Image (spheres, one colour):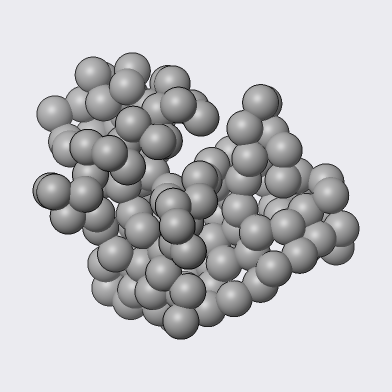
Length: 133
């Protein structure tokens, strides 16, 4: 997670006026359903738009285990997304092997550290596509 719950609340309250821009890039809010708890969990994540879709990366800073939100979308790909004041339902899916190279380049342009994160782990870090429904 990029930052704490208070930042998620400020992002929501201000329609992203506070929190959308972060360390030279941009963030969205991803809300998933916990695969064990059934509770809603919201995570701020770096993103880039790709046509009508949004791309995010399940990097967890290069850890060997993917982030919890990724486990959640594997169990239930129906998510909610907020980009600035735009809140919508989406379907989350892993980029296919054919799609990933181009999408990875898009994401490393906005956050070059993703390449470093990939070097830290044997796990293939996925790019996740958020498709508005």
